[in-house]
Image (tube, rainbow, N blue to C red; front, side, top):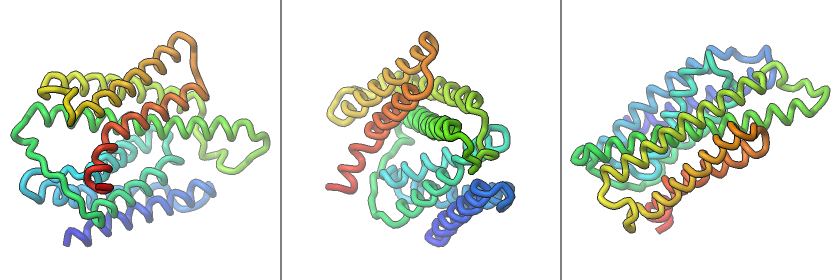
Length: 263
């Protein structure tokens, strides 16, 4: 039964992405409301699958594929919640496509990493903060890509494709910096919680994660200071945003990838 639910979630996400791509390419294409409704049903099916995949074992199965699927679910829910108030139409097919792939990966790749986080309340706080920080900064990364694309399109004089679907550049830029600020604050608090609740953040288990996360935090702080004091925009912002999310991805998933899949 759980396999059917997972396949249904992946299919619904893919169908929603296809519907919204039609709207994206041609303004009079498929209905945006239909695409978002299909994705909403997919989110529910995805949640049911995640509960079984993570909580179905003794303890919590926090394998790399399950964590990736959880991250994609949080991002998808966030994008859906704000879809009607924040311009993210051109990002939704990418988000839904990634969510579909993450569900299939969690279903089809047989890896397991059992934890007992219920025995360590502090660890629950640290993991939750880290997940929300990462998801916020990944969404910021998506908006940075959107900003880069809009800038490119604005330089293409006479280009009509997608022009009516593109939000104002300044609006996207404002959302981007708000997301980066929120994500940086969450990342700072998550690192602080790690130093408080974990015995040693620089032991063999956590050292690489700590160093990479602190490096990412420094990158985002430089970006925020540069924007505030020097008015950084465009290329500098995009490069630093990409660098920050790459460092965090290595911190959160690098060792898991090696231990659970490559070895």
